[in-house]
Image (cartoon, rainbow, N blue to C red; front, side, top):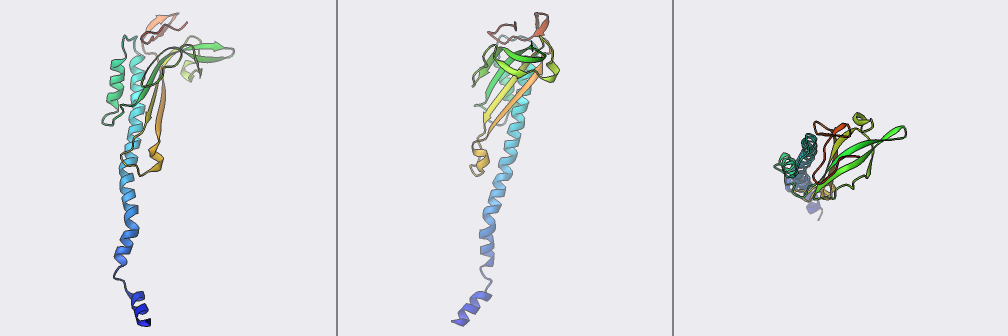
Length: 189
């Protein structure tokens, strides 16, 4: 019996198989993560770019339809499938509130999301719009990320959300300031 125990202790015939069994799951996880993490990062970057693109497009003029704006925002995210992307586009007015300034929604449209209520308060105005009657637009994008592999728990229920404020580039002058009015909306009061 001692001889068998001694031979078992000195044997190295199965060491490679044991090492492989210990290392293989880690290597497979690293391989899947090296695919999934860059994909998630790129999706997030493209969604942010999409929000900036849509904000820039609506800041230029009053549009009768936003279909082309939504299409441009979707085109920026390619090749990633963002068909479930929620988009809220809003035209915002800045109003004096005592010694500070507050932003309120003048018009809002949405795709796969709920538009903001007209006259709802967003909060303080951005630094570049800290004056009464200033106007800007805001694009909000939300997207529930769908991972290729359900192996990374942190990505299973991850949702991207970007809010971009953008100054009015052109627009039509109402009440002394150029502003953009989204379809079916009204100018800021």
